[in-house]
Image 1 (cartoon, rainbow, N blue to C red):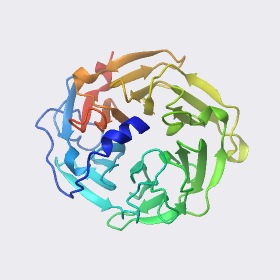
Image 2: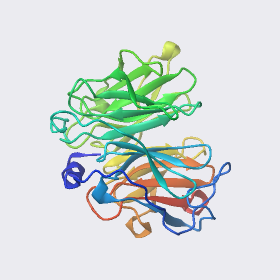
Image 3: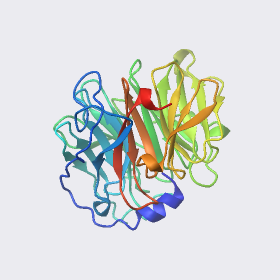
Amino acid sequence: MNKKLAGAALTVTALVIGTFGLAAVPAAAPPSGRAIGGATAQVAHIAAHFDLSSGQTPENGVLEPDGSLDVTFSVARQVARVGADGRTHILATMPLPADGGVNTPVLHFAPTMGIVRADDGTLYFLYATGTSDLTGVWRLRPHGIPERIAALPADGLPNGMALDRRTGRLYIADSVLGIIWTVPVTGGAPTAWTSAPELAYSAIAGANGVKVHNGALWVSNTDDGTILRIPFLSGGRPGQLQVRAKGLTTVDDFTFTGAGDEMLAALNHTDTVVRIRPDGRHTTVLTAADGLQNPTAIEVRGTTIYVLNAAYVTAEDPNVLVAGLRDLR
């Protein structure tokens, strides 16, 4: 998310908890479980429409084994599940800070942001409020209630998050402070893993999306339009940072396709998804004509991709777009 998007998002004021059906359109089925909406994808289809007036702006997501999708609705301060049964269920609504969130850096409202899922079904997500009592990493166990397990600086903006399943550590990108924080899934005081200058904030957002892949932490920088690779050294220390892709205007989150280091990235302001080859070259594979509206994040399972569209600027149709990976050529 970025500063311009935040201005549009502030127009969304009614935070209503509700249940909304999926669009009656085909969607691709993942290898295990049933995909959102069922049936089989052709190229790209909107599988779920959300209610902008209720603040249902999907910022980040993670797939469940049954094919449902857990998302953070940033403006509504919610964590929700778009089920394989075709309905959206609110899992948690976060408390509003006393000042209404106006002191949240850059955004000036309190958003729920990055989300990851542990193998036992526990969800970990980020909440940024500009206050020391709420900003940080939160845990939501199945059928439980949210609990904060790690405080993060109130003057920062925790955005993307990744889970290293080998070590049980979370990695959090701070888009304002330009820091990658790390904390164990058991909680505790966060550690600044790296504050390399390539992560810095300058105008919109610095470090944004985060993924653990192929022995390294990968991070997007929205302001620089780059995706960076930071290898893990012995003891989990950060190695020499490498720029692996550039020229990605307002890149938000990204993911790997399963073909080595090939990636798909969401370019927020240009309403595009690009495929990035391991050598850094990229081509556009989805556009606004396919239904993209300020894409924020992408998930891949097998040959199916899920694109979250927050519609922060378009202010029309926040949605989940589903497409067949093999059709994106």
